[in-house]
Length: 236
Image 1 (cartoon, rainbow, N blue to C red):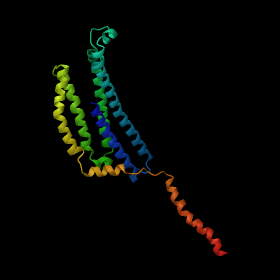
Image 2: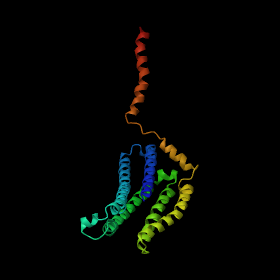
Image 3: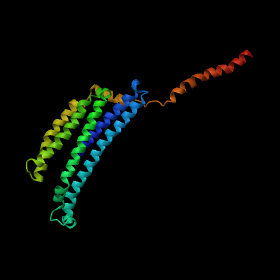
Image 4: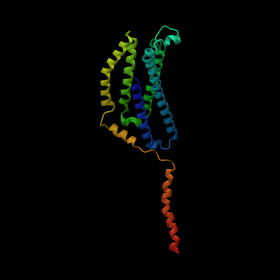
């Protein structure tokens, strides 16, 4: 799950870098400060939304592992002493926190996907060269297949926790190679024009400072000043 979230974050970061490079060399936007400010704000909003999902997902997974894999094994009576309930820490987490945690993950995941999709649609003219369609939908497929598959297997068939994990991993072992082929052929095909566009965007220099335009007339004026200094010598 963390890898899926990281993949979506990486795709959005790729889109952001390409859009920033393309906007810097777009003559229509060179003097459009309002557009640059709007792009900067929307970029920050999208990145923070995806980062929030990644961070919350990571924290929930770590907490789940600690409760079920560490506390439940090495301190099995801790939750009984803390909550005065005859239950293990793993069961207590499942009964009291798991549903709320999954709801938060689902909401943040939906927002993250909307942020990436909207960013791609808004700046489609700059992203067209790197073929963003399959780059987004490839990651969207990984996130949706694995997450909704886990929910379906967990709550619709009445399986035990071990069987849920076994079935989910077995299905992922079938699906991941297919998704890898999709990424290699459609999202990131080797030797296609999108690579040249991406490398060109990465090599794009930063926009010059406004003061840099004043430097050329000053440099060009230096020979004229020297000639003016030489003129009195010729008259003399």
